[in-house]
Image (cartoon, rainbow, N blue to C red; front, side):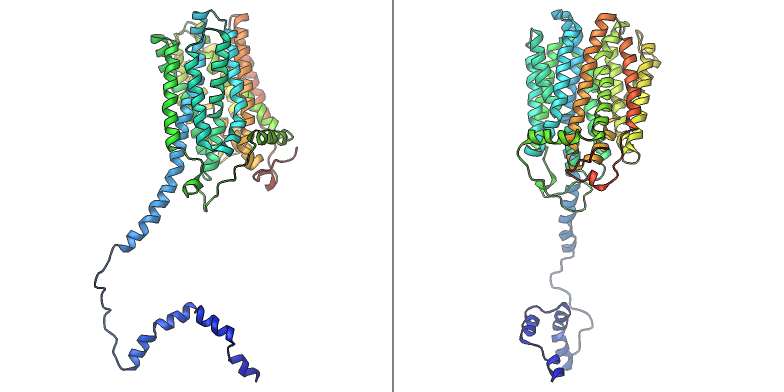
Length: 493
């Protein structure tokens, strides 16, 4: 009786068998007509009968769509990175013009260098303070709207600057409006684009976008200096306003916020990555992230070293090199050409730094960069003369390789310690960068007015770089996976 029940399928088994035949059962069923044919004595054909309408290319045509879609998903991140680079290049050109305006404003309005330095200081501080809030706004409203608004602000600021007649107007138009726009479309923007659109090659892409910022600052130098010399500083400001309008058009047409918006995935990702839910309260998130990060030692160490980075680049080199070279009898156009050479080698140095950051300890890279930069600045007063000889050209090449090479390892350390909040934390670290830049830009003008020379400025900043090299080696490594998980901030160390 037991054996009979074991051999007899129950009703539920029968229904399951009839409703959902297995693959092997389906194979037997497909062979059933052939079996009956053979049982009746029919011989199978020697060769299978060809299809009356063969379609030899149907297989290749069916596979072409997935392949073209995959190729499109691979290209799209690089298109977004290219458009972002163009926006960053344009915003960077505005920071270049500030250094070129010192002489013309002093001659036309009689303003002192320290008075002009106030506008530059405000622009750099606003630039730095905007970055973390801009990163949070990009999470809330998207890359395209924030970058487009930034380009609109810099264009308006440049246009209004061409109409100014009072120092307070320079502070408002250039310091506030241009500072807001350039801060929202700079390194924090580059970090957000890299974080959203790339999983592989992040160090390389960070280096490329950072190089775009410096390229904008230096590639426009010869052109802007020639325009100022031939047509006046107002024409140069209006020209940048037009450039911002062109970049705004490209951003609105081609930039996209996240790969998921197009049904794609980030470059190098193995699976689809959904777009994060946009949470309200961007300003609260930026401040909350600052409060959590401020309780950790890596944040202050990175902010301190990056402040020295700003002091030794935007603060002294990009603001005071041309006036210092002019003090030694060098024409402004020749000094601008040297800075352009710095910008050209900046691209190679920053991209190379991104490649190295993907492979080596970021702390050791930072220490080496700061040490070499400090040494070059200490030697600069001995090299300045009335012409661009081989020593100054060599300085421009070396400084260009080191100038913004600190950015990829700094972003990598922010990502290691702060995970999903890395872009916002890096925005706050960038605020320290601009505070250092603004302080040295202002102090450099004061020292020049009081001492009649920039020699003390170069020496002081060189010593600061040596201190930053020592600080970089004290940044604590992340020792647990939770320290680098998205949205988590490691405890104090």
